[in-house]
Length: 310
Image (cartoon, rainbow, N blue to C red; front, side, top):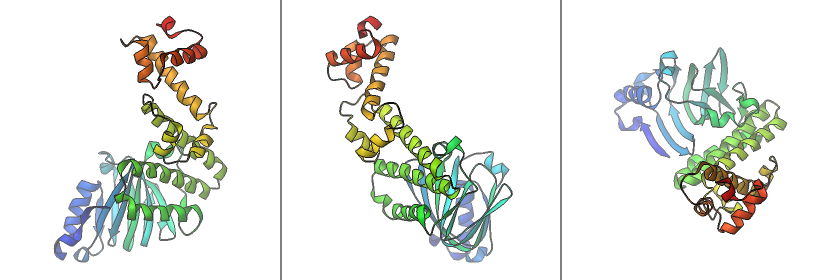
């Protein structure tokens, strides 16, 4: 993981001031109050996994407060999910108190006021989960902030151990692979939080629908690539070909049908709009290798020839 800040580089008398200056005004807008400023140590390491930021943090005993004036200059529009490795920490938000320890993770919102109470020295993983992308994985896009994660068994343990492996090995992976792992981690965390609220049935469907939307968005961005096979789509999104077919069972088309459907729709729009290119050029730019094949498929779908539309 990349080192963001460490007190080790400062003399003991200067460590707390350096921490406060670096964290409060640069890393995240908060106020901090250490229990023993003269004996302070801490560090922050992080690695990005696509839209997710995974952070490994060491904190001395302190209070961390995010108030209204911090939120007015919004810097992190995300949910925080903390998985404690060592120590105990309370999260106070919207009148509720969530206790977090090595057996219990907690989730809270960066865009609401909160207070973190570190009860002694704390070592923790923090996940910055983008609000919009994470919410899509839940029924009615409602993230259960009241849910806790049991990190000692079941899905909670899987999610926690997954984070540990990502922290240890993620820095050696390339950017595209890390992005795929970040999507998978959000799927696992969503399922974990929903199962904690006895919503496993809804969770399976919600996670799969969100995964399908993510893959469809990826396909849209690569429609013009001639080598866009189902195998490549599955590989690029870090899933098996079998699971790709499983996800598309939620739609009215197979994965292959949806791919060609979107290519034809995009061609239709471009031809109808008249963007200056020839019909053949448009077809080739959208992944068709034969103008005859394109015309046949176009006529079969829309009941007219491409040149009749123009």
